[in-house]
Amino acid sequence: MRFLTTSLLFSTALAARPFINEPDTGFEEYLGDLAKGTLPPLDDIRGIPDFDYAARNYLNSSSYTFYRTGAAGEWSYRNNLEIFQRLRFIPRVLNDVSKVASTLPTTILGHNFSAPFFIAPATRAGLGHERAELNLVEGAFSGNILYVPALYATLSIEAIAAGKPTNASQVTFQQLYAASNMTVVEQNIRRAEKAGSKAIVFTIDAPATSTRHRAARYTLGNANSDTSVLTWELYAHLRNLTSLPIIPKGINNAADALLAVEAGAPAIYISNHGGRQLDGSPSPLEIAMEIHEKAPEVFKKVDVLADSGIRYGTDVLKMLALGVKAVGLGRPFLYSNVYGVDGVKKLIEILKTEIVADAANLGVADLKNITTDFVSNLGIINTHSFSSRSRYRC
Image (cartoon, rainbow, N blue to C red):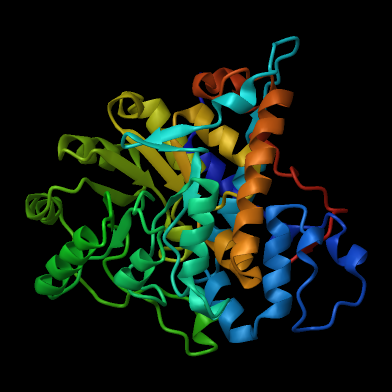
């Protein structure tokens, strides 16, 4: 099917409306006067956006801001969240969807997981909980989903690996950044290998520091502020340094997706860094749509991963329909981490439940067979997708 151009999508997303952070679904009203610095009961968390409110109410302003901040005016952050609601479904009826739950498991680079989503690289989990990334690695193991530790995590590569089960059966990938000192880069690859990582996720969309006004108010620096040379020649050099597959993270268009495939990438990772790096960069949904239009063969040649803005089971389904193999969530898992490992586990269960229920209501009998036949571009041009009577929290 044909989609509207990315430019039209993005211009629609920037129309003047209240800045959405999480929709008002009655959570604050239900909780009443919850004291600042207090967590709502975990049993009261019903959706992934609830974790955002819980973390904002519980954490100090500096810690929450480090997680929440976006680049510059945060238009890309906003667009990441809003764009999903402008891509409408085409539900099919009278399909036998009774076994859709059994189709939830997926593979990423040949590794088996229980669901088509994972914990994306997200730094400094220690700001939310004293056990930091240990909650993420344990929660991922319990839910049998992929975890990709951030290079600039609170805990070291070695400490996170030590949090895996003793039989080392858990599959994790490791994020990698380039640096001006290539010796450091090679050392990090060796550390990942020794820690048992099964792949390297090489972040390529951050050649320099970014403008983050919200974080700057608290003098919070970027986790990665090193200006480095990022080229396809460097990618080839890194591939020659290790037998681990190296996935380029930060693909923003079809042209670069094709270059990545030509360069021998075993998978590609669509992302705009959660809207934290370059304001005005397209959302993962728009990128996936462009690749679907201009280079659909990419989805057949390599596994395509994506992150940024995923909050609902319906978001996951739209990405899967375009050909994405699995999607990552970063901020939501950091927010859930304020509850410790139980919060991480609950987020995983919420999203699994939503994907299955939403797929059934969409008429999808097998998640492996969802296609663009289930989505329409008609709603994207509606600049009033969100009612002006609805209230959103910033």
